[in-house]
Image 1 (cartoon, rainbow, N blue to C red):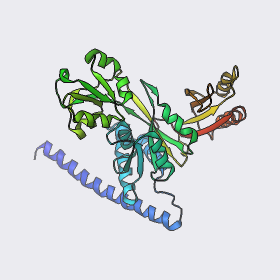
Image 2: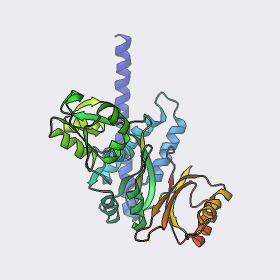
Image 3: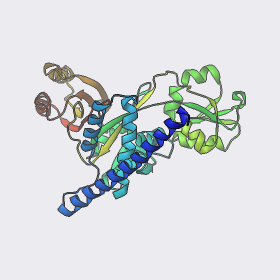
Image 4: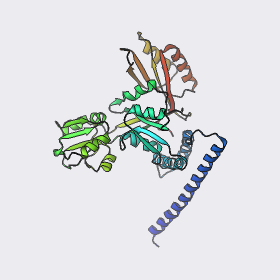
Length: 359
């Protein structure tokens, strides 16, 4: 037997052992679910802080050759498949399928969930509020185009909490039935990707009509119906809609990411490193915003984002959306929120959740 054959046999034996261990893990998870049901302790089977603890422990023990993100990906799929033995999680996202929101949902929750595509961001919130989905995934910010204002607006009236976040690298592809770029007469895409590829389009397809679509998936579907049209979408859309990849990675900046929020009826448990998001309005007086921001500075709390939004039906009055490092159970954060609650006309804590990059 050659050395190559021997190595392959060793891998086969390990695969056999892995299958037995995975099956054993699934049986144990089922027993835990049965015991919780018997004791009447179960609200739902998903326990995100337990998953985080497992991932933290495994990453601490990981000595390679697989990098930590690969370990996390493998075990997230295992978590997803294990939950599906009892009851698959139902995840609402900004649809239709193949959109970046769909990809973010799969990346965060694994493939074994039931995915619920929604026509707009408001519908994602509604599906979770009504209990039709366990979680929602909504885009909140792109590294090139900035904040998605509609997502922030939805939090004004929603009782939901931000329980996590995830980031997705955005690779934008020019897709078409035609393989020759010169034959393209019309380009479909969502307004955000069109904006993220503005310079490339001006250089390479000047004068070609750009038509906004409700999603990158709809853009791919429209391009499929017209031999002289193209879509700007993700690589997955080319596979699903049978389009040719004319150009790869046409976004104007290589470092193009979208941040997505995971929303739920439940608050997240405290993690090792946390981020908190709040929304507030203050009196329209000279120095009022500075006075508010100094609260955070005096307590050594690092702000990672501040965004203003006009108040509905109240011209020239604003809501402020703020992200900062820390958890609402931290003493310094408690002090700031207590004082801010007295100064602000309106204050809502949207959630304290694990900072991205932490399990």
